[in-house]
Length: 403
Image (cartoon, rainbow, N blue to C red; front, side, top):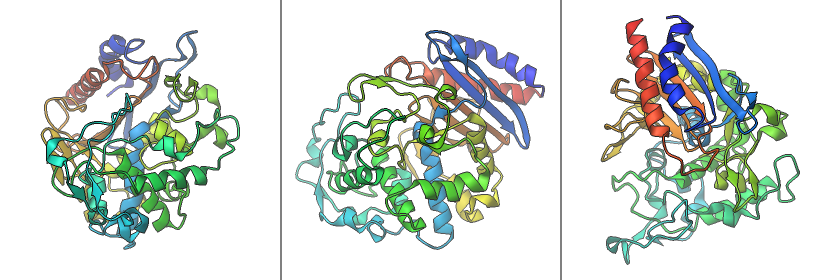
């Protein structure tokens, strides 16, 4: 397939959304060992229509970061340092120090309001000692989807090009204490999938401790994922690692907490408040390196350090609720509203990020699609990203089928 034919096929979809759903887009499409497309559209400064997006522009991956944490953890499992059904407290014992915790209704991530507990939760408790790594990976831990961990971690950090008077380790230690005390919203392992950022924050700390760098996930992600796969663009806190702000896609104007537009710092408040490094969010990367992670999983690349049987098992269903199907860390293609669209095969696996990022892998077509946008640039309430993702993946699959 010619690069130009795929580009022409995608133009109607991109034209419908560029400038409306998002101002900047970078897209890498790989089939087998062939890079079919590595291209970019739009502007990193849409107001002035300057700094055109480039294929190597860095985007805030948001929850696509979770795939890197998952990859590192499964490598540690393959080395025998932990097992999927080990309790989290075997590595992070302070998580169980409270004993059974009450259930509540959680917290709204947009309004920050505490939500009322359903009648079925009143008077009920959950035992944190029962939470296993499998529960964290499948989002069946009973932990709340979201809490304002950043409020416990410390004051708003200064802009990312200025030193933070509060060390990153202190921010993380403060946040971890809060994570080890919050009420649950359900019982661990009761089969209900509740997508939880908190679970991946805790998994990130387990990865750091198993790797030998407690309180600091970054060295583990670099040593176990980024360096082995040669993902040179990927980094936490890009400005402090010498990346130019002008090559980074900005995200939302955070008027309420930081008082500035997020540009070169992670959009997610919890990841930012924790020092920019967390298991659930924080990585920045170019699309080609996100695609390279997907290709490594597709090809069972030994550089992942994951045992072949575990690697295969991770992209099979382990939990499901309604139309949501979960592997080990991976989102599996689900019902009619899957962001993978209708044409990707039923064995497809991937993940999305709140900032407008996604990675989807279709094993049947040997197809990998890394799509990075900054759809929160005008605000987090703008819609259209699901429709774009579905149309994009359908158009790519259709064009690949014709080739």
